[in-house]
Length: 368
Image (tube, rainbow, N blue to C red; front, top):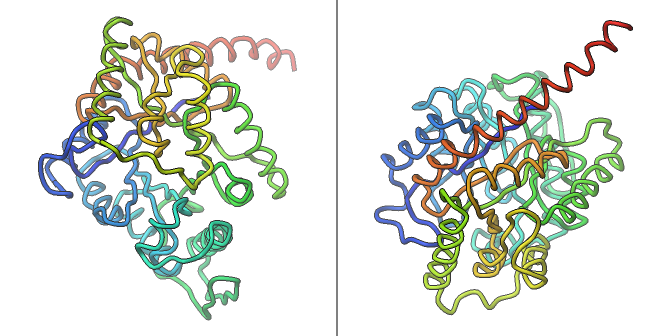
C-alpha cells in the first residue's frame, strides 16, 4: 500500500529547542518551509491549532494559493465556531487549494487551554460535541437540500450551503486521541486516525483499539492510521546520538522549571509512562524528548542514520501505518534532510514490497 509523509506548516521558526526569530506569523518563513516540504517529497503539512497562535485556516489559505502540490491538514477545534460556518469555510479552502484539504478535528485534552477560549465542557462532553460537529460538517458538505438539526450541542433549521468542496463526496476527516471517549468518536467518524509514536507493541494495541471502535460503530472500512515522530538523523549512529543528547539538553534549557505538571490527556500520560519504563525501544525509538516536554504532543524521537530511521518507520508500516508524521527541531533544515535522506529509502522499499506482492498475485489471477 502507498505510504504518505506529513510535515509541519509552522508560521515561524520557533521550536522546543529554539526561540523564534520574528513575529508569530512570518509569511516568508511559512512559505519557505512549505516549499521545502513540497520540493523534498512530502505529501502534506499540518497547520496546528493553539489558543493564542495565528489562525491556522487563514494561514492555510495563504499557503494553498502559493504552492502547487502540497496537501494541507488543517487542525480545527469545534469550540471556536458553529459547524455551519466551519463547513463552508472548509469548503472554501478546499476550493482555494484545488481539492487538497483534510480537516483534523481537535477535541482538546487540557481544560485550562480550552477555557482560554470560553470552553467549559468536560472532556467527555467535548468528545460528544466533536462527534456531533463532524457529523454536521459532513452532511453540509454533501447536502444540496436544506435540512434541520436538533442535537445535544447544536440546533439549526433550514440550512444549506452554497459552497461545496472540490473533493467528492467530501474532504477527509482526521482525528486523534487515546481515551475510550476518543476512540468511540474517532472510530465512528474518522477517515484517518492519528497516534503519537509509541513502541511497536503499544502501537499495535492502539491500532487494534481503533479497529474495534470502528467495528463497534458499524463501519466496514477502518480508518487509515497515522503515527507521529520527531526524527533525529545524522550520517553516523554516533553523530545521531550526539545530536539527540544536544537536542534534549536544549529542550530542558528552554523549558527551565516548567514541566512538573501532570498532563490531563491520555495520550500524554501514555508517553510519560513509556518514558518512565525506559529510554530506548525497538530499533530507534527514544523517549527522553517526550519526558523533557512533559509528554507534550508529538514528542518521542527516532534516532539514528537515515537507514536506521527508515527501517524503524518500515516496522510501523508493517503494523498497518500508512501515514508518517515527522518533524525535527530545526524545522526547515530537518524537513529538507528528512526529505532527502529518509523519505526516498522508505518509498523505495515500499515500492519493492508492493511489486513483489503484485508478482506473487499475478499467477493466481491469471489462473482464475
